[in-house]
Every structure is written in structure tokens, then in C-alpha cells.
Length: 216
Image 1 (cartoon, rainbow, N blue to C red):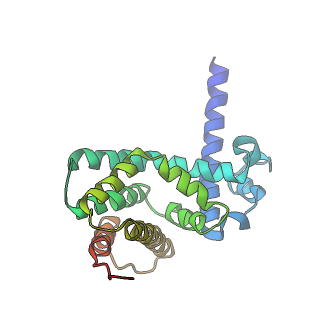
Image 2 (image 1 turned 135 degrees about the vertical axis):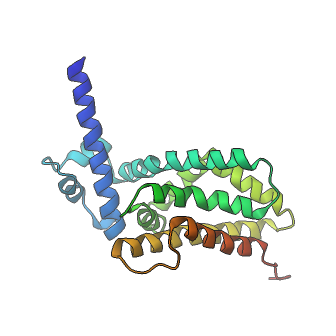
Image 3 (image 1 turned 30 degrees about the vertical axis):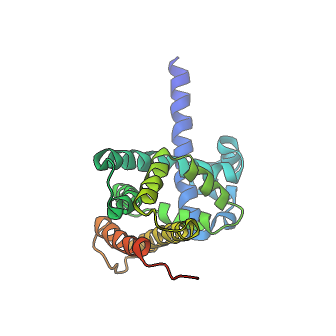
């Protein structure tokens, strides 16, 4: 039993090293610009086939990185939803979109690569379907979007969908830009992830509450 436990521990450590190395390299260079061999070397694995052995295809590796971060983000959002109840304030629902992400990034310390990794994945035509699939599997995110819809019943469905796309782009790329600036040591508009989230929430409230031009 001890031998099995030790082996399981070694496998767990190896998988974590691969996930960390892959996320960093994918964030900095793009997913398909990085080979499995480069990931294995960056993870300190002598066997260049380690990535394939532990994760299979690169798509599976990308999905594993996403799920690693999805769990803590889900817990934060579930906590926020429990505190909010049936709020009718758009700002509360905007916060429920933003703060779980920024709180998780803040908890990771510095430097982080996850925001830039997500930005790389969502802009890759062959991988963005993974993001959509993983997003649809989040119960807390579905409840958050339902809360938005209850607050904005007058918005036409096509406008709601369009502004949802805008909101996702804003959150994804603003978080990636801040993460990049922190990694490079360049100035950022806000002093902390908490303050950056406040700015994003302000912008999203304005986006969702903006008037709709008739006949557009």
C-alpha cells in the first residue's frame, strides 16, 4: 500500500509540474507554438513523452489546465451567490462575473499566467469551443447569467447576447493585460486585483445599462 501511495504522489506532483509549465508557456507563446517536448523539458521531465503519457492530446492538456482553475473560481462564485440571494441590482450580478476571477488570480500570487492563457485559448479557433463547453458546465455561472436576465427583461434577446459577448471579451482581455503588466513590472491603472475588479464592474454596469438604439 505504501508503494502505491508513493507512486500516486509522484504522479500527482509530475502532473502538477506539467500543468504549471504548460500554462506558462502557452500564456507567453501561444498554445500551438509550444510543443509537448518543450512542456516536458520546462516541467523537468527527462521523458519527452511525459505530456502525452499523463494527459493525452494537447486539447486534453488545455482542458485540464482550465479545470484546475475552474474549481476555486466556482467556489468563490457560489459563495457570492449565497450572499446575494435574489438581488435586483445589475451591479451585484456584474460583480459575480468579475470578482471570482480576480479574487482567484490574486490568491495565486505573482507572477500568474492563467489570465493570459485564457486569452490565448479563446482567440484560437480550434480551442475556443473548449472554453464554451467548460463555461456551460458551470452551475454558478448559469445562475449568474439568469440573474442578469431577470434584471434586464426589457433588453431584446439579440442585444443581451451581444452584450454578453462584449462582457466576456472585456473581462478576459483586461485581466490578461493586467497580468502581463504585473509580470513585466510595468505600471497598472489600479493598485490591486480588487481595485481592478471594481473598475471592470463599473464598465460592465455601464455596458449592460446602456440604451438600445431603435432600429439598429
